[in-house]
Amino acid sequence: MSMSLVHIVAIVSTALALAPAAAHVMELPNKIRLPEAEYLVVQKLYRGWQFVGIVVVVALVSTAMLAASENGASKSFVAALVAFMCLVGTQVVFWVFTFPVNRATGNWTKLPSGWIRMRRRWEFSHAASAVLNLVAFVAAVLAGLGP
Image 1 (tube, helix red, strand yellow):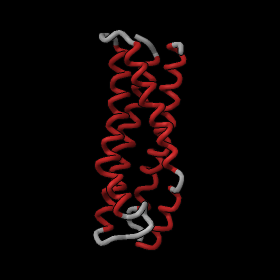
Image 2 (tube, rainbow, N blue to C red; image 1 turned 90 degrees about the vertical axis):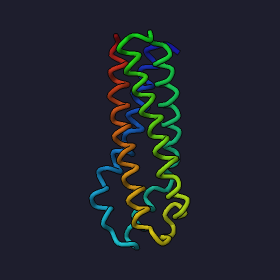
Image 3 (cartoon, rainbow, N blue to C red; image 1 turned 180 degrees about the vertical axis):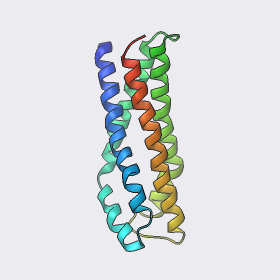
């Protein structure tokens, strides 16, 4: 795989990972106040979104490859490393904050006691991931611009 292809894959995959994260942020102000029944209906929109994980894996691998291909002292290396670390950060946020809520709510098919607190945790964990995804995308673009 040529370096130019690695750059392109890193940029495109981080952009694709950013898209659903940005969608979460844009809908958050309207969703956060929905009553129980409406919130459960809206959450059905996320069925099938687990396939975004494929894009995330591609973004992780391509940014790691990009960092590994750069000289450790170059600006491109630092940018690629930042992109990779931000993507790792999104995974930490998901597995520590988002996934436990998904399990507790049966992927939002039921609302256990304390669901409002869980909703906040779920929504804001996605917002945090969106910020990390945005930084990863910008860093991948900067890494692709060269030294």
